[in-house]
Length: 171
Image (cartoon, rainbow, N blue to C red; front, side, top):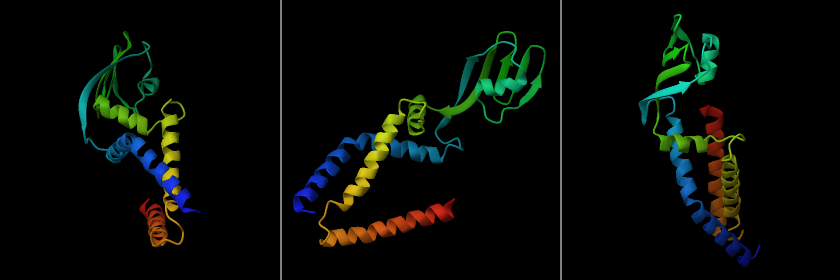
């Protein structure tokens, strides 16, 4: 590899890094927020009304409301009560009190967790490919005989070993 090639990789590495600064910040913040998703951190109580099909049985209500672990606590002729709220059988209106993120944070989390069913998954693929480019291009920024390259290889090996240990023993 020549000096000109290493300079080219430095240039692309730098420009892509600057381009992705905003999205990297969003992914870092939303990823950190997702660590606390099982807690009430940065969540607040909200009253949500959802119009559903009238006369749903309790067995279908949890699916219609997209609530995990749904259990009806009581049922009468007119209503079904559950932990999060009530469902009026005649009108089909469900009123719930849920604990969720602010809408801006909800959008960040939704973007971070995008699947192939969301147009945002293209952004996730582009971001993942960019991170792979960053990892590969960091080895091509220095000539293999340079001391920085040899140090980089040692640090990368240490980082890879650390990652393997965290995956094996941390989960």
